[in-house]
Image (cartoon, rainbow, N blue to C red; front, side, top):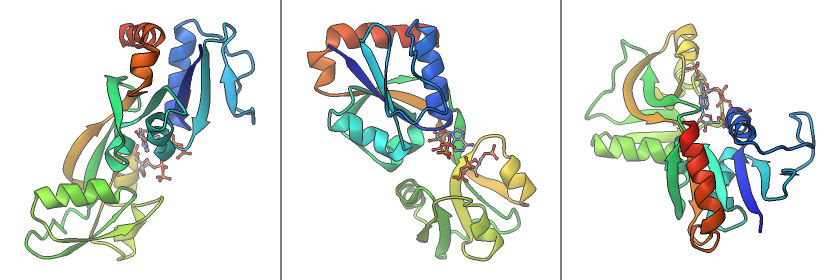
Length: 206
Ligand SMILES: Nc1ncnc2c1ncn2[C@@H]1O[C@H](COP(=O)(O)OP(=O)(O)OP(=O)(O)O)[C@@H](O)[C@H]1O
Ligand SMILES: O=P(O)(O)OC[C@H]1O[C@H](OP(=O)(O)OP(=O)(O)O)[C@H](O)[C@@H]1O
């Protein structure tokens, strides 16, 4: 029986593969430059494939992967019927409202929000009873307030340097973000004897 991992491409996958290697798994055919899609460890018990982060919950929910490693931002933006088993404490950052410091949130008036995370933004401003028009943007979100497209943004902040270099500030923190280990709800029952030790091993690494 093989345990299949779906890993979010980019910084998360890099850290997740390091964690798997630290657990003693060897992936002879893996390299960052490889165009292969599926990598199997030398014992043939673990496979992983790299996917766009928003797709990780889908692969795990549908059972195409038993385990996924993905950012909490993705799980909040793309809710899925999966078990969130571990906070891996990697890929740490914050989901924030950001904009011009002298342009605070006009509570009571409608506000235009630019974001890569419309679900997270809608939920947050709903809890604040703040009327918003949300504009979905897929990258370089900080541009929105700079060119008058939006009053503020909801985006990830890690070091804060992107905001700082563009004259923007954090106006409110929404939540802490880090990578999570998620498991398919059927796999956790049918492949328990293989999945439990893997989760334990990850837990001991933290
Ligand atoms: N500064 C950051 N920007 C975006 N994501 C971050 C950052 N720091 C940590 N993360 C976490 O890393 C995860 C992956 O980020 P993202 O999807 O942007 O991929 P990436 O590593 O930036 O590579 P790429 O953007 O080329 O796909 C995010 O879901 C988030 O949980
Ligand atoms: O606080 P910092 O350390 O500056 O990091 C935050 C930046 O990192 C991400 O951008 P990234 O380039 O990863 O992806 P993007 O394509 O979504 O802009 C995020 O969208 C912010 O722009």
